Length: 146
Image (cartoon, rainbow, N blue to C red; front, side, top):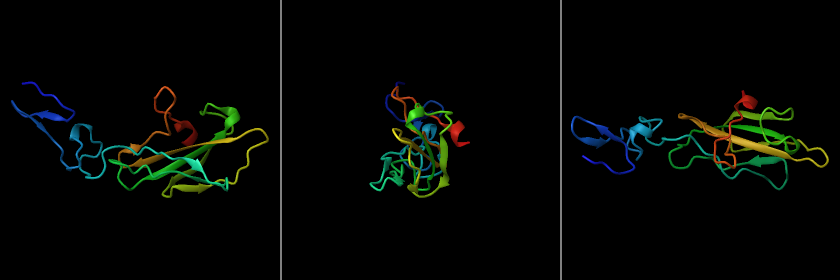
């Protein structure tokens, strides 16, 4: 037998069948929450921006297809002078385990400097990435947060 497709098939004694226990359209083999009908992946945060008042940081929820609606967020901040991010003196955890998609940061960067922000979402599948490097690999700033 030849099976072709992007689905998850399970060998069942001579036949292959697609198994999706929660009916969310993602097969159990690649579903991180096979018993939860609205979640099958970690959240991916997009739309990170600073409001015109330069004090409010906001982002899109990351609750797209498969991420569900119960997402908590962690936010990091650092100095542009210390890029790339990762284990630098000015890096700080701004917020941990918040449920809103905004936060206030009254920090004013030094003359000739600026600030960067990273946000990740966490759902029942686990923590999503803080973003991606130019090489398209997940960026992990776990050591800053933990």
